[in-house]
Image 1: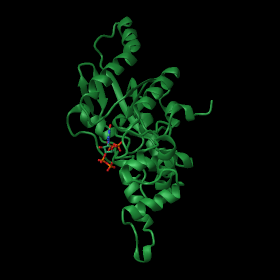
Image 2: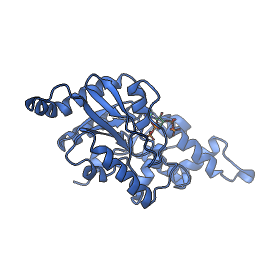
Image 3: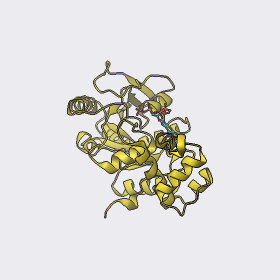
Length: 284
Ligand code: G4P
């Protein structure tokens, strides 16, 4: 992640979001389908209290479809509607529109009973940096409207994007901060490529990617690098280094270069559709 989150940033982002949430009926929370736990922020439940909620499991094009379906079921059991989307594809618009209709149906019926007709549903998109908020808003609105910066505190005047006849989206997304204090969270975000090298040691991240692939997606490492998956993760890392010519003078492994290849392959989806977190990982 390009930004450092200090308590001051969080307070500011929180205040801004609390102000904006007052204006909306619905909070659309973007999570990364590959890491729905690590890309969420539990503070949102408090901030969005009393509002309808819809979860978009974004980047679904990069995630394991079976696991994404299990997440949808998991959220359903918690009473929260979730759908899988690829924010870059216009095909997701219909999925989102249908999901929004379901979530706000009750509110509309209440409005009707009170004699309020045709009032548009107002929604706000929230999520941690890099989860795809700007991409979603831009794609959905069909124009380049969302600011892509991740810094809190740059609110312009409130502007609404009319998505369809009866749905309006606040053009400024709410930026949530990741749970950096949790090491697994930081590692999982780094494995997806959302956290940059300044935050974590990239060779650690690469070795973790190897371990995860070895355990959950056997065959992927062999396919991509022609390495022996029966070896330990560090040995595989070294094997990849020599197969890819990441060696310094005297045959010493260039760990940075090797790590970059592995992390880059993961970030760009070269291992196929991969999920890092599954509902079965959650302690019952
Ligand atoms: P943000 O506003 O929440 O910070 O995120 P943003 O829209 O800037 O998206 C972050 C990156 O994720 C972008 O890649 C964007 O194209 C990509 N992205 C967003 N939604 C999806 C999706 O559904 N599927 C896939 N595959 N990618 C998605 P980028 O510009 O290349 O940035 P980076 O990855 O180089 O940081």
